[in-house]
Image (cartoon, rainbow, N blue to C red; front, side):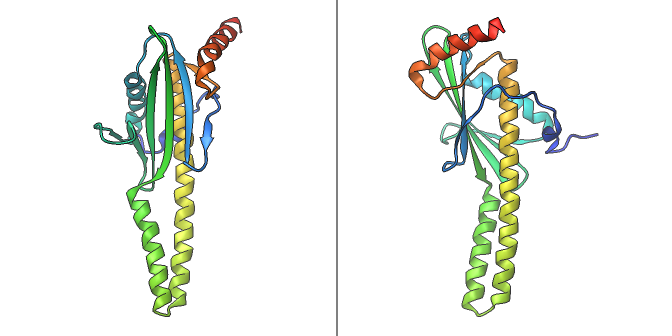
Length: 194
């Protein structure tokens, strides 16, 4: 039996150890991970790709000209742009910052523009029934897009939690760069004593 595009949503993930920093205005969430094994961002990105490929997610890899490292699509309406920044803190110490921005696909954007244009044209031509239908269908489609975007964001968050746990990356619960090393040391001592 072939795996479908959404089967990864049926996987029972462990409870994540990290609460993301959510930016509602950017429609994005950010996570930070500490490692002293010298792991670079490419290793994390490859692990995410390796996790999602069997579930038939379409993944575009940046060729150097985009603001994202990976673009992950779920269906025809939603995508997430993943950007990873690796900060070198001397030796093998690295802080990996992950930013996942939820976006509408190009088709979803074109559909929303189409509904808007159809509504305006229908009102100009004096067809309020057509305008009403366009608004209702547009709102329903927007709700479906929003639902898919939130679902994809949740899945990518869970995938990142699973992959980083497998890679033994330590989740960092702060966005303050000054205290990252202290926070990582504190969390690793708490984690080993528990």
